[in-house]
Amino acid sequence: MKGKISVLVKNEYLAGSVILLVRGLGFEADISGKPCGLLSIVDSSSFFKDEYDASRLIYLCENGGRIPKGVKHFLSVPFLNPELERIICELVQTESGGADAPVLTDDDTLVCGGVSLKLTQKEAALFSCLYENKETPVSRDVLHRAVWENKASREANVVDVYVSYVRKKTREAFGIDCIKAVRGVGYMYTEKYSIIK
Image (cartoon, rainbow, N blue to C red):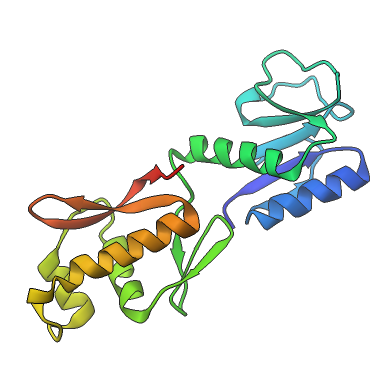
């Protein structure tokens, strides 16, 4: 799981809908009596007067209702799920300094933000080699030895071709670019992602 989001919504139906959406995004979510975890989602009937961090709060207010001072992220009820999803993703991205990290499973599937992407065996091995050396440039020679064990022709620029496959797939599936070219060296996995709009 990526982190916990607490839901302080007294309307049972609305709370259930919000929890389903949040869990669908890959977060842990439960009804809570007070703000806790990565973010908190509250409604006007649950709003509390204790100290709270408004930057980590999404406020759901009745259409035309008043928004408490300091609250920057709010939605009028009823709202559309994509609106709440967008705000959650923006806040999590700001909190973590980037997008959620892609995770490679044992069956060569890359998972990020609740989205799965199947990689070929070679693509997964290339991604894994870069990930294990994150934020450190890895030469084409090292990648070639790690993935192809020197069996593929170096003349064919096979490393560059496979890096382009992985970058294209991650851009299309997750909207992020986590592999950077390092001039004169090779490639690097970075957690300072470029977000593709």
